[in-house]
Image (cartoon, rainbow, N blue to C red; front, side):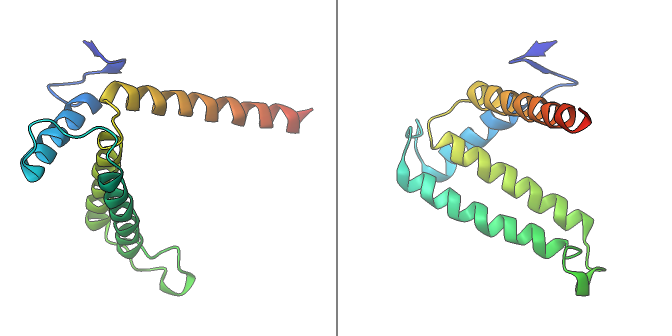
Length: 126
């Protein structure tokens, strides 16, 4: 079964499903029946949250620091990556983008990155 250009493996393992769950959660915590589109205050709040969550990923995996190369908590890192992804969905939600727009933008950017890489590789081999 296809949904918004994504393969639905089983049940609700799609970006659309996650996105819609997050919208419902945001409605619960904001007590809004309809979330505001392109609300700069919420956008700014979630951008700041993103910075904090990214710092928490780095805290869970300090192998990037040469002198602390043994500090790594895989489960904590995965949880923090999930927090970053959720926060990113909030940024998109409060910027007025729906799940299909977000999926298409991500998909298109990946395609662009692949083409850029291939072009660079072709230039280097000539």
